[in-house]
Each structure stands twice: as structure tokens, then as C-alpha cells.
Image 1 (tube, helix red, strand yellow):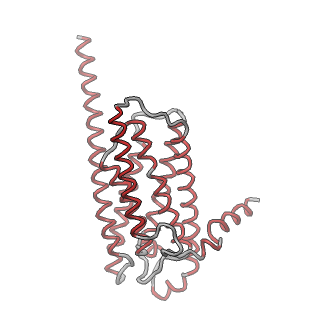
Image 2 (cartoon, rainbow, N blue to C red):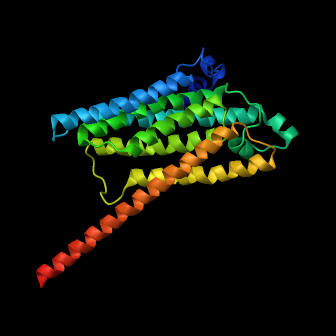
Image 3 (cartoon, rainbow, N blue to C red):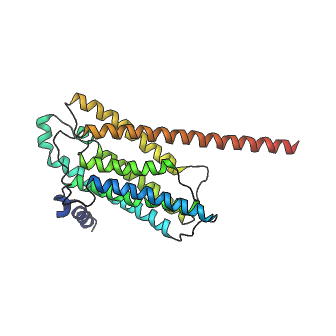
Length: 290
């Protein structure tokens, strides 16, 4: 029975005709044009700012009740991320198996393929299908911004910037068949599976450790892993004669560094404020005892 389940999973995640015959193109893939990307990001930013401004004008202090919607969203994002991760693992394994004969002629290892696509590769087939599903999942990720605005009436520039950049990056991976995207998607979906699973746990009111910022730590780990792999891509680009989509990779790398620096800055400031608050609390307690 276990073997049958695995075979069914491989069919639906690997061998289905829609997956094997996938091709990224404006005529076959929804949302694959630059005009759509610009319109989607503009709509997202405008809607978020409009909702935030409306709530401020209404001077509503209490959070808008959302019921189980945020919990269901977190559960859905966790499950979708797990499916994308599994599908990408199967697809990458199949790609390694099917093209191993070519790699032997070019003296390329599977590890190098994960970091550096050969020049001239086209965005079609199993791997790029799951890259496309990952791109579509970024639109569901936008909903979290509106949950935060409705609940806490908070809207930061960095949140809008970060979510928009994630969508742009996933679009560029497909548009230019960018190297390193397989590992990036595997890292991201693995982290998102855990992060959104944790958020679902919190939304259900289950016990958590308040002193442990699970989501922030996971995001920093993801950014550090991506940064380390970007160094590997750069080395292979010069040692192996070029990696496909290197222009979009440079853009991706710069944005990853900027996001990582912001997260590290926020992380340090948060811990410093927490320690300062703890120190002040201990000092006040000692004064009262005296």
C-alpha cells in the first residue's frame, strides 16, 4: 500500500501531462507578462495603503474580527509549500536522472546543476512547473499584509517592499531561467512549511514560547542559506564558463543582501530592547525591595 501511495504521488507531482509539458509563455501561463506583474504589484500596494488609510480615518482602535480566516490561510500556505517542496524534490531527482548522460560529457555534477543552469536552458518541464506554482503562491502570501492591517492597523514600507520583491524574484526565475532557483525554492518552501505551520499553531491558541521568535529566526536562516549559495553561483559562473540568467541573479543577490541586513538590524534592535526592558525591570524591583 505504501508503494502505491508513493507511485500515485509521483504521478500527480511528477508525471502528470500538465507538469511534463509545462512551458512558461504569455500564451500558456497565467500571469507571465511584465504588464501583469506591474499591475499586480501596483494593485497590491494601492489596496494595502488604501485599507490602512481608511481604518485610520475611521479611527477604529479595536482589531477587525477575522474569525478563522488567518488560521485557514496559514494552514493552506503550509500545505501548499509542502506540496511544492515535494514536487520540486521529485522533479529535480528526475531531471538529474534523465540528463546524467549529458553531464558526464560536460563534466558537470548534480550539485553544480542545482547552483548553475547551463547556458541556453528554456523554462519548460517539471522543474519550471513547480517554479511557476511557487510564483503563483506568492499572490496568496499577499493576504497576510491585509490581515495585519485589519488586526493591528500596521503597515510598514518594508513589508510592502519585501512581498513585492519576492513576487518579482519568482517572476524573474521563470522569465530568464535563472540559475539557483531550484535550491531557492526548496529552501523557501521548507521554511514556509514550518513558519506557516507555526502560525497556524498560534492562531489556534495553542501554547508557544513568547521569548522565542520562531518566524524571524527561520527567515534569517533562509536568507543566510540563500546568500551562501549565491557565492557558489558566482564561483561557478566564472569557473564553468557562465550560468544561465546571471543578470537576474545579480539583481536577486543585491535584494537578498538588502533584506538580510534589514532583518539582522531588526533582530538586533528587538533583542537590545528586550534586554534593556529586562534590566530596567530588575533595577526597579531591587529599588522597591530597598
